[in-house]
Length: 119
Image (tube, rainbow, N blue to C red; front, top):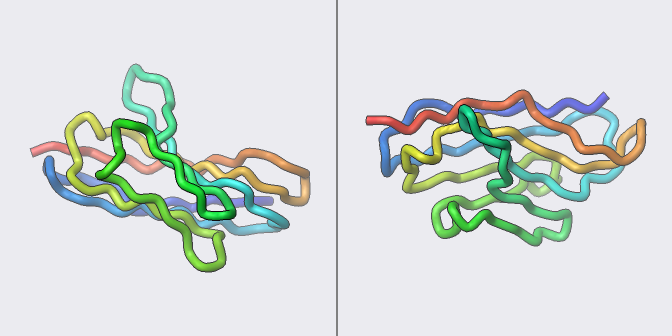
């Protein structure tokens, strides 16, 4: 079984920063892509940023220049450094990992971590 454990959400004032973490564990043979999605109340889940095994990154336009995605050296953990947070960034943030495990190639989701941006 593959597990994704997220941490780092919380309450921050507009203009503040947060760093989200997601660690993958279990029987993992290859990780292809790691990323972060978010879902605000009443809205669809949307891609925030992703990073491939070759470290190619992709960002949604609404976070470019403010958020940075990265991995650890083992590429089993993914981070999202969020700076200059805005109220519109408030959402539940989900870690997403596309990998090959014991049951083949699948997309796995974390449990979500709440980010609240408010004064």
